[in-house]
Length: 210
Image 1 (cartoon, one colour):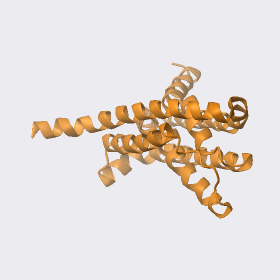
Image 2: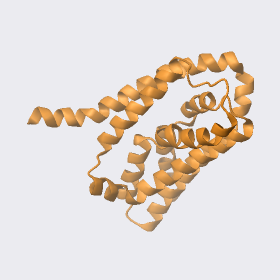
Image 3: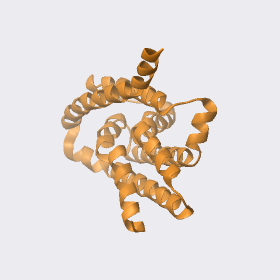
């Protein structure tokens, strides 16, 4: 395959796993009580966090996992639990704060930009695993560079979509956001269950063999 085809393949795999359209409702809900500047700040921090996470795991993920004895299955279980909590709060419309104290805004932005937006919403178990596998399969520096380019392109697309989410918020309106939040909360909970059980299955299989 030529380089363009390979990059498109890598890009598609990351784009599908990271799902920018699925991230937007969560981002809109969690930042609905912030100003536009604060929302943009949250988006940038979340994407930067996710990008560095994916690059670190791409280059050192296998060694980090081996060193700490961490498995991808364990990451999926934890990601599933976090997703479920976020989804449950969304389903009950508890993520939309009426007001955040001025002295708490910066801490709130830092908190949600790292978890759950940066990790595991953007850089989730699937995307991290994909980064590790693709970098492991890359046989030369050119292939490794294409993996990095694919990660940067997808995170750039996500950043643009999040920065443009403010306009979507105005278009949909407060009532629309509430309805969208509940629907996406249900979907996020379903994703959480899928993550959890796909992660816990290897542990159950190991226990059954004992």
